[in-house]
Length: 425
Image 1 (cartoon, helix red, strand yellow):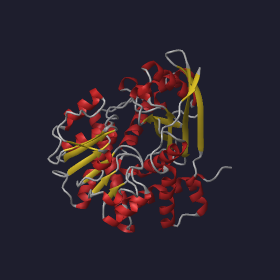
Image 2: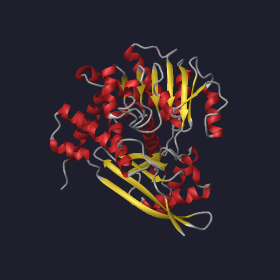
Image 3: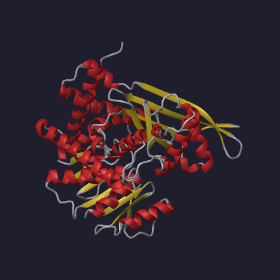
Image 4: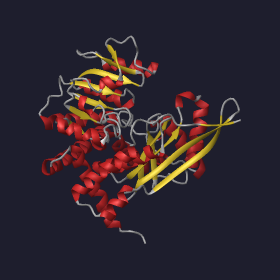
């Protein structure tokens, strides 16, 4: 018997439309050549695979997966692989485009890519997950490679999944190729500091944003939507920096305590071992939607795209939003937030810590020379804070929003690379 995995209902709106609208807005502001705009509005390569996997009960199930390359003008493409029932081609296209801008803002020699499989990984046994991962890796094996396309973890995937992909690729090529993927276990060429990198980058960018706005981080109230790797790490590090984390959420709901949630490290550990935020943790239980509207100094949306939209942006009361997730704010919401005077630090800057340390891992694998974690963290801090300052300088001169400034920097760098390379043949 053969069954087919189907996607659950996607979040409201279309992230690919949002991504293109963001590009169009800044292209108009920059006076970008229409032909160049069309190049950037399209993904260079889109790959869809439907592949069979034998399940534990002997049945065969067909899964659908995607790998999309948006732009490779600045170098090999880079981007995560996610396992989720909400994966769609339009979502992957948007995420690939955002990766292009994110790498360019950080000054990394990468283009943007993204991929995913329509699946709930929690519904598979370990053996089924491994077989599915290895078959997907084989299906996209013609695209990936250290000099072509370097995937990484994303929602629903982790270091173990990356290890299976690295091993599959290595077996197909007859030699060990650790640089084909990042986010691996340290034992097989992963980098120290990679797991915490995105959340740590959120901390560094928040520190810079507070400094730019004249806001003290110590004592500032923070709400974090999404308590996965990024949100949990960001919450823990922000608390250690003196902020008061008053609300966090996962897929089941949120908890809120105006005086603070206490020791965030304890909550992170409970979440890690039990999978969900415990009902017994002190605080008022609220919805994810209610968390976004809390009266806090800093809101960190670190869950899915499209969470702040035209229907709820007017009710957002945070003074600052630091986007830990990709695409959490729609263009319509951006306009509303700008009118309200909310300072939004965009995703392509705020959550770039993950790809920055992925770049470090790739470099370390290529040269077979590895750095201590302190060096990784110091290099991350230097690069992401420098990127923030570059964006802030453009913002000071051009006005508009910080997102527009970040896009102007990113688009300019990609255009320069495209023009330098020319159009083949």
